[in-house]
Image 1 (tube, rainbow, N blue to C red):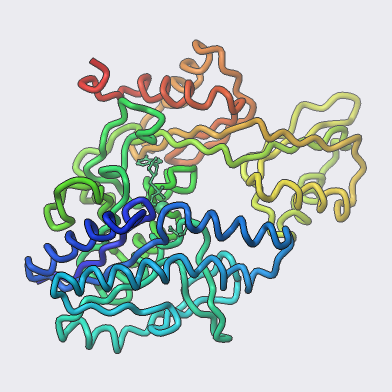
Image 2 (cartoon, helix red, strand yellow):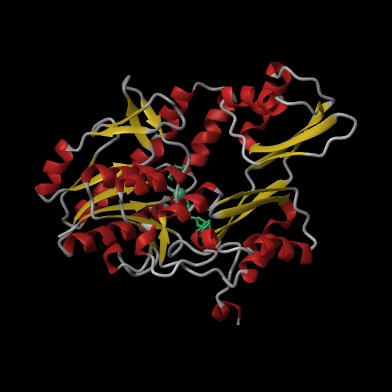
Length: 413
Ligand code: ADP
Ligand code: ASP
Ligand code: MG
């Protein structure tokens, strides 16, 4: 008998029929003798709609009230899922974040889970009950509902798995696992059977939204085996047909490049005509850090006549704040600031890169052959990222996928 967390994403609970389909997978797990905790997302499109309502009231709305609104989508699905399970004769009960409680910090809109009290849940599980938990939500120490950031139900599920010491956290979604690139962009992408937390963390943070970054972080820290699989395939989690996110050591042969990620969620900001003297980077980036702007890639252009340009990227949602901060708080003279939203970041990720040269070279040659201009480059031990014009994203991802030998030739034929 195993304890399994089964999380169903928005498309997997998009309507009543799909909720019933998801419930039937849980029933099969229970019939196989497993204890199950179900974590559900809001029905597909619901959270977007709720976010839109908040923006319509005011773009500068109170984030505590935003959380009250957007957390409601998951509550609906949790109740419906419990009913669907009961219809199959399974003893099931829904538990909202505050009822467990899942305690978070006070950072509304992107709260972090601090503690989960599992006492009562554990007792119910031992009595054979299935718990259904709305993802994405928790309660702050001050007693207010908080949400965990978009895609946060993945994190709810992995946190639940860690707190309960579950054997596995199954993330049911609308694709059959983690692929070598987003299968919606690269038809020849291959499903990866096993991937290391470290690689998955890079892929997720570089734009592969199949798992929320924080859920992978939490899985790695607590050693939770995470399986990504499709709720539309016949298999259930215990058939082990999805992608297992696990420790590096258990992967027999690490690929040189495991996957390609892309993100169009970037803005490129250039500060033109700053004096090229020691300390300018500190003076530019310290106020941005204080304003909690997430600066990612940085380049300083060559200087002419003692002046230089500084270029860097920030998440698109933070570019207005970045510019405001530069204009208000930076103690520096410059000619002007430009913002370019027509960019995207493409990254190649692989643990095998640690011990191989030439990975970057293949990337640059491939893009050159396609006439794609590289605007900014950044690297780490297991990834190389480049910034390009947004219109070339798909071409770049597909070409790199082929260049690193990742294409599934059966799918191309
Ligand atoms: P859910 O609603 O189930 O949480 P998401 O939309 O958040 O689902 O995540 C699943 C989506 O992630 C897929 O439909 C796919 O388009 C996208 N995706 C991006 N990169 C990858 C990848 N490398 N492997 C699999 N899916 C990916
Ligand atoms: N419903 C939330 C969202 O759309 C959380 C999730 O689905 O993971 O972001
Ligand atoms: Mg998701």
